[in-house]
Structure formats: C-alpha cells, structure tokens
Image 1 (spheres, rainbow, N blue to C red):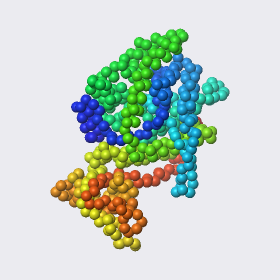
Image 2: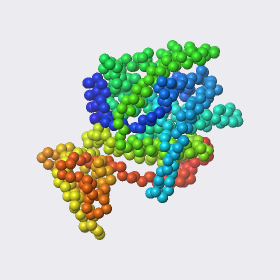
Image 3: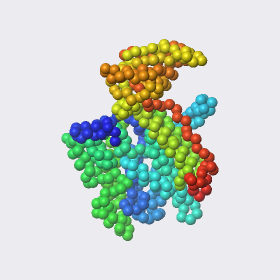
Image 4: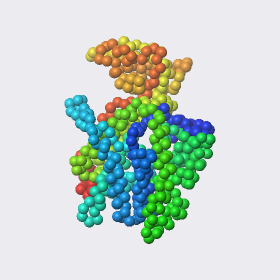
Length: 480
C-alpha cells in the first residue's frame, strides 16, 4: 500500500465514508455486460453448484446443479452455461472494421464490439479458470462424450481468465477490484474482499455511516458471501440436508440458491452504476481497442478450428507471456498516471514527477554543434517540490507526450528548485517551434520520468532451441 493510499484509508475511517482514489474511471464499462456469479460446492474441487447470470438486472437467469457430485449433471450445467455464454458472445462477432498496420501498408480486421464479463471477486476468476481447464479438453465423441458446448465453454472461460491477468484489460473484471481501484474505504484490504461491506463504505444507506453499514452488510442473512464460496452455516444448516437426500428437490434447492445469490446480483449492478457515474480516462478507449483485438484474434482462432489452449506453456511461451504482462503493467501504470492527477500524485510523492511554473523560456534556441542545426528550446521550471532526477535524465510532460525533456541542471532556490530542461520532438520539422508546442513563461507544467515511449518486444529463442535447464524442446504431450 502506498503512502497516499494509506492516508486515504485513514481519512475514510475518520470521515466514516470512502474517499476517492481517482478522478476518472480507469476501466471500460460495457453498455451490455454479462454479470456472472458462480457458486461452488464446499469441500469439492471446482464442483459447480449454481451460477446466476444475465445482461438485464431485472431478469437474472439461475442455473443449478441438482447433485454437483454427479458427472452427468455437472456437464449438463456446463452445456447450459456454454450456450448462455455463446449466445452473449456471438453477437459481438457480427461486424468488423479495418485497422491499418505496418504504417498503412497492410490492413487487418477486428470486431466493432467485444464481450465483457463481471464477477464479484478474484475467487470468481479462479473458479472460471479451473472450470475452463476441466472442460476445454473434453471430447464430444468416443468414450464418455459431452455436449459440444462443454469444450467450447472451457476455451472461452480460459480466454477470459487469461485476459484477467493482463493489467488494464476489461474483458473479465471483478467488482471488488474495480471499486478498490477508485475508492479507499476505512477498512482493511481483506475486508474489502466482501462486496457488500465495501459498497457500504462507498455508498452507505441513508442514515448510516460506512462502519455501521459495513457491519450490517457482513451479516450473512443480509448480504451472503458473493461466491464462489458459501457461508459455512448455510452449508451445514440448509445445503447439506438438501443435497443429502436420495432425490434432491431441485425446485427447493433453486429457490434457496436464488435467495442467496439475489443480494449479490443487486450489488453487482450497483457497482456498475457507481463506475458509470465516473468519466472515463483518456486512455480507456485505446485499452478497450486492445481488448477487441485480443477477442477478434481468439474468435478467429476458434472459427479456423484452432486447437484448445495448452495445459501448460512451454519455457519460451511462458517467458514471452511474462514479458508481455510486464510491459502491459508498465504501460498501464503510465497511462493511469497521465489520465488522473490523483494517481500522478503518488509519483510526485516519490520524486518520479514534479510540477512547477515556467519562469524562463527560449523557444527559438537552435543547437548548431552537430552536423546540422536542430531546434532545441530550453525552459526553466521553478518548483517547490523535491526534485530527485539527475542531469541527463529524460522526462515527459503528459500534456505534450510526444516531446522529450532532458534535465540540464537542477539548482536549489529559495522557494524550492529551479530545473532547466532542454526540449526535443513534438515541435514540427522546421527550426521554428509550432505555436503551443513549447511551454511559455507563467505556464504550469508537470514533468515525470514516466513515459509512453515505444518499448521493443523481447527476443526469445525458438521453442525447438529450449535449453535442457528449462525442460528442453517441447513434446506433443506437453501441449495436450
């Protein structure tokens, strides 16, 4: 937890209400998301018990497994869930748009829309990942066949679960993490994992403070756990007697589970309402474009009859995936800071950014020491904040992201520090800077070590050249 986040939690505790951590929304919220609340049977490995899902808050659909230990019933549930998910995903593959690539020399296509799934908490993502793994390799013919929707469901769930690991992706989102990204409550992070208690701090009922509303929400009778785990008292008192009967009364079980899941269903839509009330950040649309690219590529892979995702990645594939995730995390952190002054404040506190006023400017300065003269304006920024960058460091101004600023000097002054910066790029191709491209005297500016500059992908060996220290070249059994 950062210093400012800790301070925000302290302020929320003192005020009895959550404190904003962001001024904009840092994730895309679909106009028609699919809310999915999975529930598993306690004591069984990834045994589905029920799932409440739908795109209409007024019409949730409940799928129930009468006997989760029965293989046929479990796969019948998976087939129903697969049909429901496919019915939601397929309309997104209707219309595609051309996207220029290779500097306009070629074109590719991506769908205009992509699906978005919402689950209450990270446990829901873990359940979908494991359920996808247990279903995507099932055969639809031969011994012990399953409906065709079962392996298709497994492949889609694996795709969504993998996308949830990518920082900034909005294909599969959790309600508690989305809320925690934008608000700080006066309770611990562990307590924030309870969706009802977290919402009680952010949007308490009339007449209640955050702590009082959270204590009320933690009562299982008021706000049951949001899956995939259930309340132990409910398991012992209600669920076990029903499932222990020789002939499980499915109608009664369905009514009981509907009552348990209905409160979470309403909390999920309250979460979406709160997030929609925030204006989107400037980079949110671009990240959603990336999600549409990923969805389009996977949908095309399925249409072409491609194989299911492997059980485990080989050494090279795992290293490449880790590299992509690290690059996505760095890019996401920079974009959030550029979009939101509250997020940038964290970097100002650590010395990775500073704000100040331009006190001197040479917009027409030309450096003619090289083979040809180049435009290199200089400005002086007076800042009261601590400057922890050395001469020669490269900085970026979020207002002019295409321009690089190199620190020439940082001199202590009576009111802080005077920083001299030399600018390059983003000013046109002539020896005269375009209007507005160079900060003027009196302008408030922010400079940071964060940058959206292109980072080349890592170089990895061919899978056939995997060294013996990492398992050697993959064999067909490893990709299953």
